[in-house]
Length: 413
Image 1 (cartoon, rainbow, N blue to C red):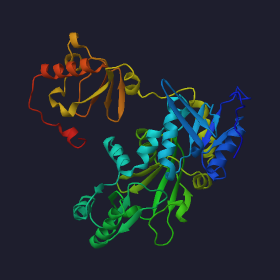
Image 2 (image 1 turned 60 degrees about the vertical axis):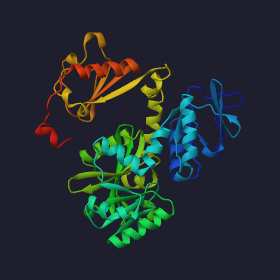
Image 3 (image 1 turned 180 degrees about the vertical axis):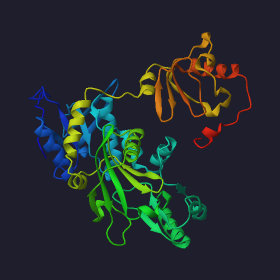
């Protein structure tokens, strides 16, 4: 374990440098070593902190944290949280976030990405293409699930797993039923997923840092193995990523709340499908395959971004009792389609609409004359009781009318 970069007074001897900590239980692991190495090349003195050695303290009006019994005084943290310590690692990250310490990935982002069902729900809700998936809680649902995902063969997996563990391919209903029954008896949550034949035994790993893909590789399984994971002795090769694959990878990481992520993509007939998003991606395979200094890209991103912290606006507003953020999905109120914002709210109930979500983008401070569309989502902020009353009144003021979804939107709804 490398020494702490602070002295007993909590002062960093190199005050001009970013105080960086890497949360990792394995200081000798390739990814941890490479991050520390690249940080030192940039004049930093990284501290490798075992996540299991933190003590968290909560008192009236304040919170504190110690590592190995010493104050933890750092500006930024790169979490390398293993699956086996997810719960504790996330608790530590949340504590650091409340202290205002910048984290490369948040606790919420890590939790969302590690629950395969939850991640799929978020991705699908944001129109990011994923394989068809069903959540199964009883073996009587297996046949229905298989039909929904497109028939046999099917991929069966547990919602929590890593490096290809808990992922199986089954070719008959009997095999599928027996496997699901066994997994359910062990208390596992089970998913049945569409099998993409054209992507058998291979996938693409895109390494996202910030809002761009910095490196990518194609992974291929050996022999009859259909899982292509590097840790399962799969081979890796450099790949030039088409723009639609880059876009899917970046959007997937973003909607799951991750700044650093390994996004696994399947090469389907109709384009990329996001299979999984890893919040602590290994660097060895992708650095060797792509020839890209991924660790250096991560350190450069961290040093450039630590001056800025993202804010959960809803949480911030809730510090004022009764205030918060509300969203209004126009498709749930079709009588509003075609209405301009100026006509939606009268002057006595002016609503602060600070963003409008449309076509996978946000329109900030939309103009009053913009007309609402079926798939739009209005995002408003302010005093919650007033917001709800004003929104209800606005919807009552707009005449109810028969509504037919336009042809151009039927395929998108």
